[in-house]
Image (tube, rainbow, N blue to C red; front, side, top):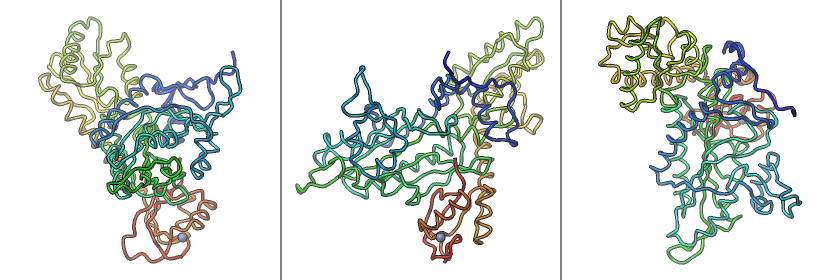
Length: 486
Ligand SMILES: [Zn+2]
């Protein structure tokens, strides 16, 4: 055998608070979301992990379609000369591009890039498809894999190959393109908060953090429990840069020829990494119900002759399936305690226990995954007749509780800072989101990064009253969140 990396065998996950990174990787393996692949820096997305990806995919896809977008598919490989046509773009991505130089036993006359993103190939096709203002807007998304040659890798957060969606649109006016970019940013924010229960700050990236070739980049930024920010989605105004590089022109109503205004926007499986870190605990994953492959698991507690209990559990299961719930009956021949631990590790929001005592009282015991054992409301009995109707209500309470908890953490770890030395200290200490009045100057940003490794996450307009940049004393032009990041 060659040196295929072995996925670490996780017996016990370490406590989350002690070392988030170790906890995170252990949970990803132990909950069977991913395995290490036989290729450096890549992971295999296992069925339970893929089911989480499908939750994200179906929710976002529905939102894209509601706003007029269609799905299509473009090739994985991009000819080198084509990639080189937008200079800033190619310069920005060059260090991360993987190249195919051989095929069919021969050296290729032109190397082919494995897509690090698809503006180039999609722009080339748009140039052919768009002739007239009547052809606009073009609103297309694709769900694909991407390759970027990363040095350090971590499941979902950074891997050589990853899954994402990328939307690419072309418009007749700058205004319309700008509205599209804000609309998609808002969809990402809404999805993150209402589905993944991860609160975010939405705003514009600084010039230094902008997507290569864009005129404006906007992002949503979440805060992880270790005080580092995680960029969870981006939306870019590309101006006419790509339209000029790839000849995307159209005849206007009065027959003049103009370049189109294009946009692109993407969210990847990083979002899964964010929600795992934000909600998980020492027992494993804690999944927001809307993102959970299983909303509830039924565990019959059978001691000795348990035929009655099993039969009742099956009836509950059938009722819940008929009600359209994502539910599983765990009738494996294992001790209940082992089953509990298993489903807790996988973060199933609701456990339904049914034992002989429950059966006699005609109730099912509900156990909420998001609450500590023994906490108020963690465990309660529900009469048989009410089980199906109580579940959606309870799931919705869990969804809200997880979001409220994450939002309280974000607010608690967001500091408005006006003093320079305090700001620099908090940056170094990885103290969360640091909200300052900022000059917007690249030199100021570079100096902060060099001294503390914190970067601007995103910016928003001044609120009024701010006069000087907290970091350098130059006139303030924006408010900005600084943080160390993933
Ligand atoms: Zn400054």
